[in-house]
Length: 323
Image 1 (tube, rainbow, N blue to C red):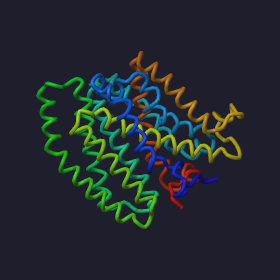
Image 2: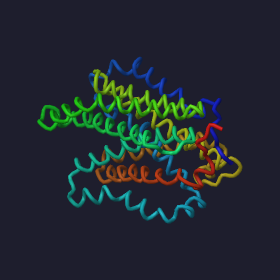
Image 3: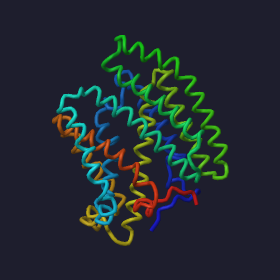
Image 4: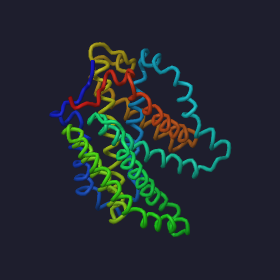
C-alpha cells in the first residue's frame, strides 16, 4: 500500500503550507516575550523531550520489521559503527567541542537537504546546478547562523567570536541573495507542478525568514525554533504516513503489533516521544548516554541518506508525489 500526497490534501503535507505559518504565529504570539531569558531552543524546559530526538526515534521505529531488517542488513554494521562513534572518539580524547562542531554542521546539512529534497521529489525534478547553489548557500548560511547563536553561549566576547560575527556580517547578505535567486529559479522551473512549486516557495521563504530573524533582529531564537519545529513535524508526517500505510492491513511492525487496539499513528507518536523522553532524561545525567544519543542522531542522518532513495521498502509505502 502506498501513501501518496494528493495536491488537494494539505494535511498530508503540512510542511508545504500550514506548518511554516503556524509555528511562526505561535513563536511571535507566545514565545517572543521570553527571548531575553533564552538564546537557543534547548534552554526551554522540556524542549528536548518533544523536539529533535522524538522524530529521530520515530525513524528507527520503522525498522522494527523483519522484512525491513532483512532488506537493510548490509547497512546494519555501518549504522552500529556510527551509533558508537561519538562515544568512542570522546573516550579516546577527542575534544567534545570539536565533535559538537561537526554535529552542528551535519545537522544543518541534514535539515536543509531534507526540506529541499522533499520539494524536489514532489516537483518530480532532478538535481540541477540551481538546486545545488540554493541548497549549499542555505547550508552555508545555516552553519553561520548556528555558530553565531550556539557559540555565543561560550565564546561571546572572545576574539574568535568577534571574527565569526564579522564573517557572518560580510557573507550573510550575498549568500542570502544567492539563495533567493537560485530558489526563485527552482520555483519557475517547477511551475509544471503546483504542489512542487508551492513547497519550493514555502521552504525558501521559511529559511529566508529564519535567517533574517537570526542575523538582523533580536529574535534569533525565533528563527532557530521556526526551522527546528518545521523539520521535526515534517519528519513525523513522513514516518507516521509510512507506518500507517505499511501496517494498514497487517501489523508487520512488532511495536505496533504489541498493542493492536490502538491506531498506528497514535502508537508512533507515543513510542517516539516516550522513548525520546527517557533517553533525554538519562543523557542529561550520564555523559556516556548523551554521546550515544549523539551517535543515534548521526545514525539517523546516515539512515535517511539511503532509505528514501531508489526502490527501497520505505519508498514502497510512502511516495513523495503530488499525483
